[in-house]
Image 1 (spheres, rainbow, N blue to C red):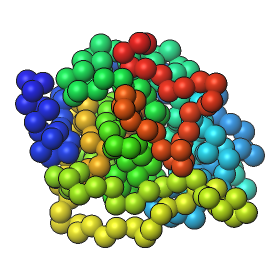
Image 2: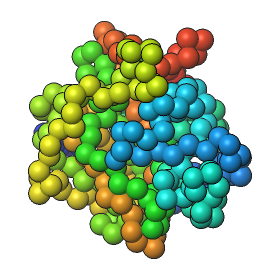
Image 3: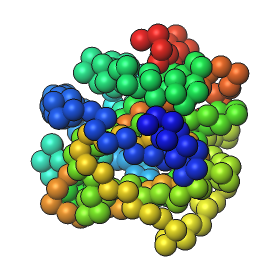
Length: 286
């Protein structure tokens, strides 16, 4: 069965592994997210995350740039007033928590380095896989924002490109609450643009896109709804997106990205860089 998934990933750029997590495991991750919400930053340190508007705060904010080895909180645009106060209840205010859950939180770490993950990496041919980042994405009802069409390798670039996303649905992902959409086979066309640290150190924008946003035909995208507990494996070059959540039901997800380290260079101008004193964690050795 793994062989068929390998072929599907090679042909389509993504594949679905249903029943990857048990009901108990998905509920444990959701419960731990509730615990993390209790530790949210105070009003002065609230940062909005958006993929739609490149001028949003993350391009200028060191809080975002320095989140690779921390548990950091990013809010939905519609959740915050101009003064940073919450317009909604705290439990539905967040876009995501990232980017070191796999390292610093025991509950998320256990899932990330589970034997099932190791087996997928082995079967996919990774020799020295490591976790570059991890995120808990909320996609809360009514305010869960759109994720624009993108390739993961735009943000986590390696030479040669060898990035694999694990996208695990902790609730049913449906057409109504913003399931993933893919352009099947689009991983064969290379990396279309990069998101990097701004080489102009005098600019207030710490991060920037190289080049304009590519244009993708809307009717080329295929919706991929999946039940709770499913894992979608995502090739780093496949184009995917998700619509805003305008439904009454959330779409919680735990996701992390694996990169190859053997004979591979992690690009030094990527926005996310490992702490010099703490390299990316090996999948096989943890």
